[in-house]
Image (cartoon, rainbow, N blue to C red; front, top):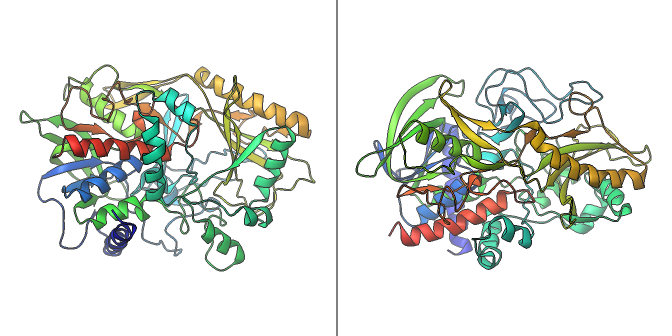
Length: 536
């Protein structure tokens, strides 16, 4: 497809999204071109995140009527403050998915809970799902995690990709599908000259200096945030977003989330429809092979409006590592899809996430203005014992903090698994706090070195107690339906025809970097094969 054709589809899809928001609709499609009617659609996709969005676009281009089911809402309508999303310093009910209080990753500052607020339960944009010793951040809404992440579009080291997914042709991935994914996502890079002089990345330059003092390498990180827009933000030419403490609760400007890229293009084909506030609770199969979904439709305040069924010939699971895995674990354990194998629910990991902070010297001010979109990382992934890729993260508090914050991605071999809890009708993650210790060990090895050389210390006031390292949450849940185990090598679920997985649950627990470009590229690879062989 030509860039002009893709651009036109994005324009048409964006118009459909805008019209739906203005009208308060929960079903989004091009006017007069709804892709399916009644209780059947040839193809159904559960979720609207990275893998789901890729799949929708390619199905739509192939002329296949497709319905996407999204449990969150369309984020396209300003609130009373004139903004779609709240910022981190003034969160309200839009911030969190049915919580009574926000749950920011930094639980405290100087041991005071300054970041969180009491809120009304609502279908907000960010969820923190708790499983005992581990909690998982996920995005809720049209675009999934693309709405709430830091936009870091990183491709893993090729040798590590070959290690985690040895059955996948790396030549194809790096020569074809990663470039295709980055083009579709709208990836761009920061201007190095501007980076050196701007105020909003002073915090990153301080961390870079400390890393270089310790003999460590840093690297610029591509992004799906528009760096030209950010440059104009700092110049005062456009409304601020990344420079207005907008990160984990959404960005009002500048970010190329999926609703502005793949999903807009998918809607622009005229063959894709998105139904919001529709949560899939159950999957079963009829004797003719058709899949029947039980779907709960709610309003943004959580009131159930209807429970209905939707049938599909082809079913794609793109609800993320938690959502897709839960649906298949439930289906197997309740006997709805009894031929699912024992690998369903296995191989889950945190991508080795661990967060930490350092206290800088008074002469190493990080600046009061910090971009919420990271642009630099410490690259120590080639360390033979303790490989680490550390995002140089912001503390966008609007004041000078003299603090450096990092989200370290480590090579943690520990894996969790999911079991079914009949009492709550849910899948429960089995993960023990001790399984996160390899991540702490790796991060500590790296940052002990940085602190030693620079005469700095860890911050012990950021995580609600006196710990320097926070490994009880992850932003990067991966696995549960691992490629080649729960599925074949193209995401086809073993034991069932026309049932597919297309999200991060395919990846066995780790990518070594932020995973969304890999999820996108793998989905591009898989749907190309599925279209060629299964949907002819």
